[in-house]
Length: 120
Image (cartoon, rainbow, N blue to C red; front, side, top):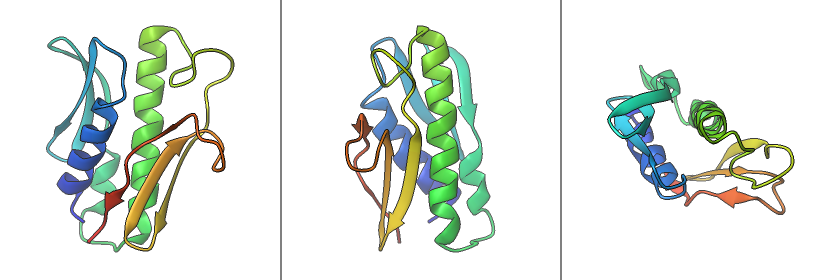
């Protein structure tokens, strides 16, 4: 999986779940959060995959990316996104065979789970 592939896959999945008025886009190997035309934050964590380090770093790069996106969205909304109240759910990511899974909250009861990403 290339850095651009990971950025594109995560951006698409995150864009599907962020609140109205915010958008998540891939910008090369970066994931950026936008409000209108303004970039309000982002992560270059997918670049951890530069030089083909293998699948081991895919989950680390995904975790770092969804963590930063959560911080940016939560700060923008002044809420514990993706939770509505209480504490922010902890971001998590893991590789299950050839599927990257990423979510917020407990493994057994996520507050929000992203669609899995196939990893080649």
